[in-house]
Length: 213
Image (cartoon, rainbow, N blue to C red; front, side, top):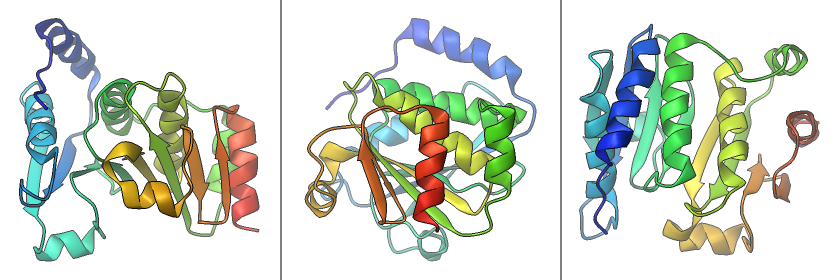
């Protein structure tokens, strides 16, 4: 699969990245090309993004390196986004379609601290004192996936006890089978609560809280 970012998109990204305040580190994880269908394409995306702003740095690791264990990476390709603080926001698979927009907007949010959630939701998420693991399964053509992925990333930005994984479902057939994925977006929280489709922010939060009861 050949991936190339359109010059018009490049220009728009340059404009977006003028908003950046704090430096961003994109950690990119890959395995051998033979075993990883889209590692080279994903590497192209992170390299292109980092070249558009001096505030964005890329650090790369290969499967087997010590840092891979530190970040608990078990699937490839993977991208982890850190700002001045270390957040648990991870993208698995090639971020194309709407998920490319989620990746870029999350970079901006981590750098600026601008959180796209209501004040009441932010307050409730800050009060969570248990570990939460959100998996959002998506596909590039899904019209509702970006909204759910975006909200899950915002949750993890508010509270570092929340880990959010955005997973390109078609690239990981073992997970499709494990989580019985027949439609996307599908959200799985702590392997305890799961649901399909787009739901309002407060409903998403309510289901998250149910998963940690």
